[in-house]
Amino acid sequence: MTSVLVLYMSRGGHTARIARRICESIAAASGRAEMMDITEAEREGVDWGRYDVVALGAPVLYGTYDKRVLAFVARHRAALEAKPNSFFNVSVVARTPEKATVEGNRYLQKFLRLSPWQPKDLKVIAGKVDYPAWPWHERVMIQLIMKYTHGPTDPRTVIDYTDWDDVRAYGEHLLTLA
Ligand SMILES: Cc1cc2nc3c(=O)[nH]c(=O)nc-3n(C[C@H](O)[C@H](O)[C@H](O)COP(=O)(O)O)c2cc1C
Figure 1 (spheres, rainbow, N blue to C red):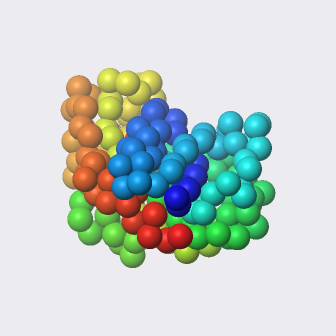
Figure 2 (figure 1 turned 180 degrees about the vertical axis):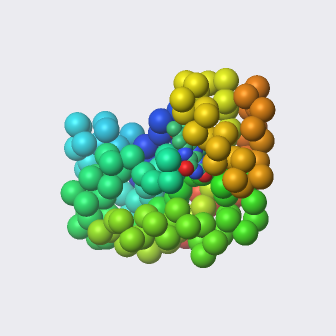
Figure 3 (figure 1 turned 30 degrees about the vertical axis):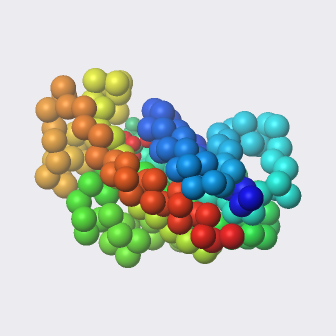
């Protein structure tokens, strides 16, 4: 049975939800999947030998990635590259079709510039706008990003842009990398 490890970093919980859906879709397709927060992975260690495929996902925050993500991929580059691997990013700019592609999503291109690990497989996933859940200073920053990208700026907005069927398909795709 093909075994997939889904590593993730999530600030507000949405990337964690995506990781969970990926794992559910792998299990539904008769694979085995485990998800692990990168902070937990650093603390507890990862038994890399147990997995056939490794995926790692992270949200775009202020145009870049949490430094723990970049530190993790730098430290574990060899383990990540030793087997089929994939990286997915989560951002609200990916709500438009042209920015939902590997070529059109500049944050994905930025990851490839910043990361010593060059993933073999890439995926762009649209995230969630949740103004009421964000502290005011973050909300204002994201309202600015939204203003420039013609997205919603009403502070009451909660919109999940994630295409959950596509997330399920990505989980099934991960199994085919083995
Ligand atoms: C502090 C903060 C900064 C963000 N910056 C960006 C950004 O620069 N570009 C973008 O497309 N989305 C941005 N987002 C949107 C997140 O990528 C999106 O909400 C994602 O679903 C968050 O995932 P998480 O809940 O796993 O942290 C930002 C969100 C937050 C909270």
